Length: 303
Ligand code: GDP
Ligand code: CA
Image 1 (cartoon, rainbow, N blue to C red):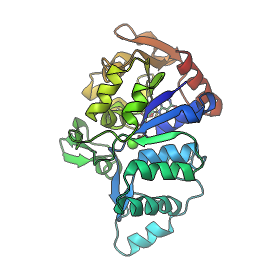
Image 2: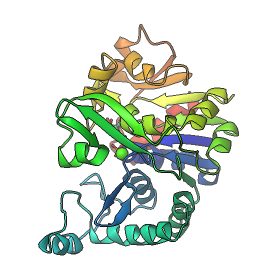
Image 3: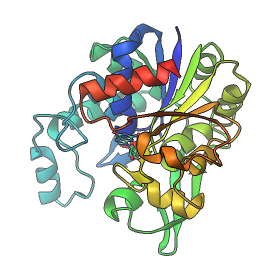
Image 4: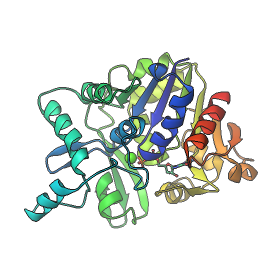
């Protein structure tokens, strides 16, 4: 069974770890967000693609929740000592990957081919595609000004309430090679429990990707990133309250209106499904350990 997943970083990666327990990775294609890619100290960083890669390769730091395990920070400390910017934390091991990516990109290799090389070197069998090889960046308009994603999220700690989310470059961005086919030929399409606005939104903003999703005959199932109306981590609940008008399953589903057939939601939200226009699938969605991740993946496939 061919499965194609739209995914952001940490929440998506957690979900994918469970999914590869129950789906043959060779049949799995992940279309990842590049809206929060950023250039740091001259290096091209793709945080969401890397969260997926590190998690599936068993390289991620589970306690910290991002980046690599057994990390050290000497390069960044030295950079800061010499006047470089230190607001975006890059560990030594992480930097190794960014050096390779940046070198290949500067040589003209597209991001999708770079990512394929990294995935292969990590020993992974899945297909990981950036949504686009073109430059697509998420910007947040707030009362304090407009910020590129990482400035809002990391430098300002996502404290500014968001009025508008913009996907700069999306109008002219082309889907990366294979992405449209992966949606067209999938037997099942999943939307990971990622932030709808800043993780899934930038993927769907690539016009031909949303069209391919709309015209696919495969069932499309989204997993809610909220439990009891609250984000497990990050600003998804605040963004939904402000931009969708609430944090119920119906509000989550409204982000994917016309796109999904079912929404997987937590037991804690099961009381709140009256206005939900798609089929609810109620289960435990907290991915606290390997068992919980696997059970969620099984429930999603059974849906
Ligand atoms: P990012 O790109 O690193 O911000 O990660 P994503 O957008 O992929 O995921 C962030 C979302 O994952 C947040 O809105 C969290 O609420 C959600 N999330 C994290 N862990 C869990 C979990 O165990 N269960 C569910 N349902 N959502 C989760
Ligand atoms: Ca992200």
